[in-house]
Length: 287
Ligand SMILES: NC(=O)c1ccc[n+]([C@@H]2O[C@H](COP(=O)([O-])OP(=O)(O)OC[C@H]3O[C@@H](n4cnc5c(N)ncnc54)[C@H](OP(=O)(O)O)[C@@H]3O)[C@@H](O)[C@H]2O)c1
Image 1 (cartoon, rainbow, N blue to C red):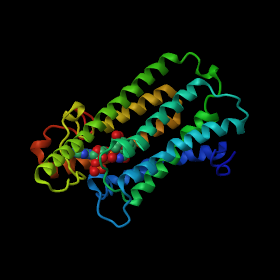
Image 2 (image 1 turned 180 degrees about the vertical axis):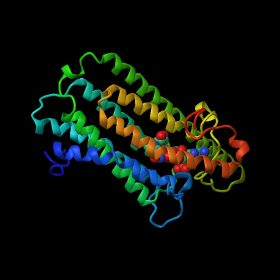
Image 3 (image 1 turned 120 degrees about the vertical axis):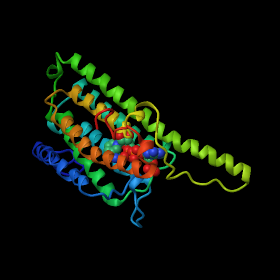
C-alpha cells in the first residue's frame, strides 16, 4: 500500500532520484562553515518561532526510522519479493534500534533538558531523516540484495561491522549520558539548596560544564565521534557497495564536523583556552 504514491514506498526511479540528490547534501550542510548562526543547543537563540527542545528532537528524528520501517514492510510486497534476507533485517534492526534511542528515549525519557530549536534547523533535520531513510530503506527493502545468496561469504565482514556498530553506539550512549549527568548533578544541587533555603528549585536548563570523562578528556564532541564509528560499522555490515550507508556516514560527518568546530569555539569563549586545554573538537588527537 502506498502512503505517498511513487514516493513512500519509492518506485525504483524515485529511489534512484532520492539517492542522487542525497549526494549533494554536503553542499547544503557545508554552509555551516560560513554561517555562525545555528539555532540549536548551546548556540540556540531566542525566537518566538522556536520549538521546545524535547518535542523538536522527537518529531524531527522519529520520521527516519518510521519511514524505513514503512518501506521495509511495504516495498517487498509491491516488488513481489516474498521475504527479505536476514542481512537486510539486521541492518534495518540496527537503524531502528539507534533511532528509538535517539528520537524517543533520549529526548522524552532520559535527557534532563534540551535547548529549544529553531524551525529552520528542525526542517533540515526532518529532511535529512526522510532522504536518509528512503535511500537506506529502498536499498534494504528491494533495490539492494534480495536473496540470502547475495550475502553469502560475507559473514566475517558483517560480524566485524556489527561489532564496530555496537561499540560506536555504546560509546555514543556513554558520552551522551556523561552530558546528562552534568544536568542531573546540577539538579540535585539545586534541590539541596532549595530544601535548605525553602525557596523553589531553580531550573538547570543551560547549565554547562566542560565534560571530562571517557573520550571527553581528548575531544569536546566525543559523542559525535562515537556516532561516526557506529555508522562506519553499519556501512561495513552492508559492504563497500552499500552506497546509501556510505552517504549516510558522509552526510553525518558533513553536518556534525562544522558543528563540533563551532562548538569548540563556543567552549573556548565560555570557559577560556586554558580550561579547554589540548582537547580537540571531535576526533581525539586529530581535529
Ligand atoms: N547535531 C547534529 O547535527 C547531530 C546529527 C546526528 C546525530 N547527532 C547525535 O545526537 C546527539 C545529540 O546531539 P547534539 O548536537 O544535541 O549534542 P550536544 O549539543 O552536545 O547536546 C547534547 C545534550 O547534552 C547537553 N549538553 C551539551 N553540552 C553540555 C555541557 N557541556 N554541559 C552540560 N550539558 C551539555 C545539551 O543541552 P542543551 O540542548 O541545553 O545545549 C543536550 O541536552 C549526539 O549523540 C549526536 O551524536 C547530532
